[in-house]
Structure formats: structure tokens, C-alpha cells
Length: 290
Length: 330
Image (tube, each protein chain N blue to C red):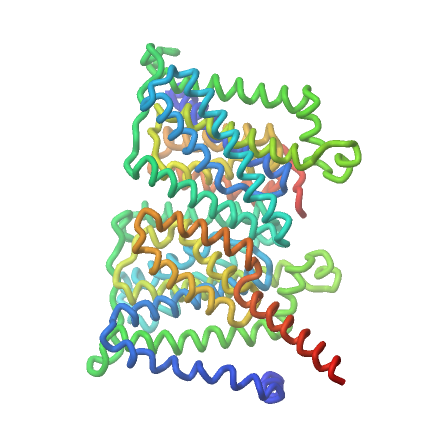
């Protein structure tokens, strides 16, 4: 029972963590909360469905295409929507409202293009189920954890070791100083957005076989991802992942040991508790705007 | 008293308010268009809720995604008190509003030290907690996901129909609640709110007890939102968890921002416009959300400070130009 709950927590946690990672990266880079992150994840799911189920591309190609498309979407989003509004507006709440508008637009486009009914994505692996420590799981679930892990390692490596990653972090920390070092802050911010949306798209396509592809998943995941990011420490990369794990564990274990109807309630009460007691999050993140 | 003398000094502005006298006659114009009167009732309800939101967000700078939660708390509390304790609606409505107010104030105590992202998350989480409590209530007293039928108010058995009666009742409520808010924001308390919004540290330095005033702001907000919720429930006759959904909270924020934050007319203009907009867009079906999103972005790009802000900007520009002309002539 415990392992089953743990694996469920890890699966959900890895998805929440990936979305939360996007949130934190964008917050660090632009200082705003992108409430459209969950919907971008769903977009990844829809694109994956199109490429894989509809057009019949082999899975890895579909995956690469989806990630690439989501990357472009993030790029365009920053360039056309966020930056102009940023330069125009004084309050950040207005920009957040803009991200809400973006999420509405993405949701409605999804409904227009793919219809409102939930789509199912078939399994892309020949191995349907896997037995691990005596319990049978869907292979995709285990794969999810693996992919999330690799992605996080990738992001870590990119951010810490490559010069562009370091430039991105510098620009996020202090745009003026970064500019004086010759870093093109506009470009790095745009890339941050593009990477965040690409990660969200990856999460979406991984989640496809598990949860199905629907538009309503977007808002749900948005809140969960946001909660994870804040719990772990908003703006902190590792905090996002940790937060995802913590939130998912809270949900999973309270569902298993207490009551599955109350699991959401317990999880959100715990989020409130953490916010009240340790608002900086578990990893003590510094707020960008305070 | 000061407010009254202030008003009489600005004699000319009185004329601008005269068209408002036509409002009580709306039901006569819309006699055969029941739906229109219903829309006006909704406008009244949303105006009250948005006014409360304006106090906590527009004046005090505390962004909150919990408006629909308090809305629901008001609606559900009033009906539950009425049904389970056999209290007449005239008692349950104020009680429910007070419940909303108290819950908001209790919530505000720990929340008052949170800023920005954390504040937003705490209000979102609060909204989720309320949603969960409503959909999984002990013994299903709230009807869980199915929602609950609510007693409809009838004021007078004879006379005009129920909805028209409701319109006048709502109108009185709007005048009362908005009037109270206007008095509040012109007082010391209101100035403290604005100070907190501008710069918390400076406000504290001036001796303002920030936590106390934030709690007050949330209290007013909870009161107004819950009251609006009770009005909604007793008008429509049915409430369900959808009314408490987070998306509704965003709608309230849009109403407040569209009208113009921290202004007298902002909430009224915002609530009415967005309500009418929603209604107009509902004909588009699938494209409704798309149109909504696009309009929202357009609004943010072109009039980020709301309709009231736009009016202020244009009138100040007109005043500047006329002054220039006057100076040039002299």
C-alpha cells in the first residue's frame, strides 16, 4: 500500500514539479506569475495527440515536435503579449490578468480545434504494465517519473553549467547588472519563457496516456503547479520540484490513509498552513517583488 | 458633515448625476422584457460584491482570488440557517453576511503578513478549501455537487412581479452599500488603506497598524461579498458549487479592474459592463471564451487603468487643452 501511494505521489509530483518549475523560472525572469502554465501543459497534450494519434508519427518524433511547438509558443507569447504589456503597464496584477486572458484564449482555441470532448491518447509503449515491488503500474507512470527526473537534471545542468543558462540566471537576478555585463536580457527572458512552456508541453504529452487530454485539466494543473511552486519556495528551481513532491505526497498519502474524498481539502489546508507558517516556502526563497 | 459641504461646493458636478434619476424607472421601460430586469438585478448583486473587492484590492492593494468563495459562503449560509434553524430570511441574510465578514477577518490575520504571490496563493487555496467543503459537506447538507434550492424572496404578495420587487430592493441595497463604502474610503480608515497599498513600510512608519487595517479591509470585503451572495441565492433560487469556482473570482477581479480600481464609480461601471458583455458573448458559444480572452488583452493594452482611469485621462487632457486655449487667448 505504501509503495503504491508513494509511486502515485511521485508521478503526480513529477508533473506538478515540472509545471511548478515553469512558474518559478518565469517568476525569476519576469517577476510575474504566468497563470496560463497549466493550459500550456494541456496544449502539449493536444499537440502530442495530433502528432502521435492523428498523424501517426513515431512517438519520439511526436514528442520532439510537441516540445518544439510549445517552445515556439512560449517564445511568441513573450514577444507579442507579455513584453509589450510589461512595458506599458504599471501594476503586475494587470499582467497576471493578461496571462489569465492568454489561458482563456488557449483553452478556447483548444476547444475550437480539437473539440470539447476529452480525447484519449493511446499508450506509446509496447509494454503496457510494469511490475514493481509487487504492484502493477502503467508503464507511462514510471516513465513519467523518469522523464521528469531527466528534465530536472537537464535544466539544472543547463542553468548551472552552460554560459547561456548562467546568463539567464544573471538576467533574472539583476537585469541592470546583467545588461552591463553584455547579456541581452530581452533574449534571455524570451528563452526562459520558451523553455518553461516547452517543459509544460513535455509534461502534457507525458500525462496524455495517464489522465487523458482535456481542457479542464489545464486550470486544475495550473493551481496545483502554482501551489507546488509556492510551497517549495517561489522562484526557486529546486523548490518547485520539492514543492511538487510535497504537495503530491500530501494528496496521495491523505487519500490512502485518511480519506480519498478529503484529500484535496487536506492538501490545500496544508498549503495554507505552510503559507502562514513559512511563507518563504520550504527552501526559503527570496521574493522578487517585496 | 464635511462630505455634504464638499458636495455643495462642487455645484456643477451635480448636473452630471441627474441622468441617474432615471434608473428607478427602468422596470417601466423593460416591462415586457423580464430578462432585462433580471440582468439589472444581477448587476446590482455584482456591483455590491465588486465594491467590496475594490475596498480590499483597489484601496488596500491586497489581491484576492477568494471573492467567489465568500459569495458562496453568504449564499449557502443564509439558506442553511433558514432551513436548519427555521430563521426568517430577514435574519439569515444579515447573519450570513456577518459570517462572511468574520471568516474574512479571521483569514486576514495570518494572511496580513503575506505579500503578492503568497497572498494570491493563500486566497486561491482558501477558495479551493471552501469549494471542497461545499462539495463534500458533512451529511450532504449543501447538496454537494448537485447544488441546493434556495428560498426565493417575495416582498409583497400583490403588486409588481417578484423580479421587479427584487430590483428595487437591490437598488436600495446598492445605494446603501456603495454609499457606506464612499464614506469609508473618505475617512481615516480609507486613507490608511491607500497608504498600505502605496508602501507598507512607510505606512507602518507613520504609525498605521497595518495588520489591523488589512483585517478591516478583508472584513468589509467578506461582508459585501457574502451579502451579494445571499442576494444571488435568494434571487435565483438555486446555488451550486459552480458559483464558488475560482473562475468566478477572476471574473470579479476583471469587473473591478475594468471599471477602475480605487474609484467611486469603477465597481459600478465594471460590474455592469462585464455582466452585459458576458451576456452578449454567450451567443457565440464556443467562440465566447476566445472573444473574452482577446477583449481582455485589448482592454489591458489600451485601458489598463479601467474605464474610470480612461475618463480621468481624457478629461484631464481636455482640461489641459482648454487651459492652453484660455492662456493663449489672454
